[in-house]
Image (tube, rainbow, N blue to C red; front, side, top):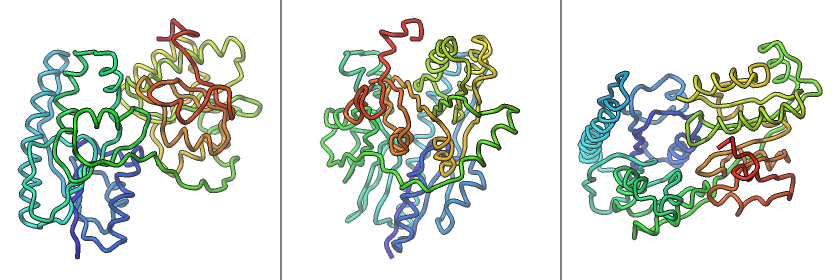
Length: 350
């Protein structure tokens, strides 16, 4: 029996990154013995999604204070202690189990792997954020900041790198810093099933005590983090309200920016127009897309996501930014797609 070890060292969020569960499950179906090393804590939902897979966890040094600059140094300590601890743990597991494949998910913080004979190391990346833009603009500060994590991970030797074409030009970044063999794949998606839209509509109407009848419904499906620029979407929506107040914006996703975004929503008098639905299971996302009229995304890094592809599949109107290589997939004013050049049209929304 072939043996494979998957490693993911970030907070586990299986609802957002489906590949974290789908890839290991495919190996399990093909008869592999699958071990999976996760960062703690691990909830029951995660364990249920990975039945049949041998789950192992590790903890790391993680402290926070109320002081911004102290937290900066604590994050660095956390990074280096995790890197050392994880490297030792992976090598111990590898020594004991002699894996045929070690599969690293994302930017895994490790020092070195003691590779055995006839062993394959695969490194899968989920994009490179705005690193390509920083290189193109010769932003030395951002490049240096990226070196410790992203660039060092790219430079590490592996037998195969799998790059996701999420619009961040990760293939160009990878070629610049690595000589490893790689494949460049566009995000995949499943055929969307038919659903009864009225069930979700009634649920939302009951939850928020509203009526969605004859209302335009916008939807944003993103983690609530800075680079996704949900604040920009909210500011754009505040301008739209002056033209048509009969609408709702559904925000799917959770994250550290939630409190800040709710403050902005309240300040712009949009509390009755924006529905913070939080994080929902991946299989439920398409239901929200189905009931929506307009998909909106305004990330600085890239706007090519599975949700955007699914929105196109469902023939929704798309409003997005031409960031990354978004324009390679969709064209302005074609097939119900409208690329917002926000820097020109909405200068105060930057």
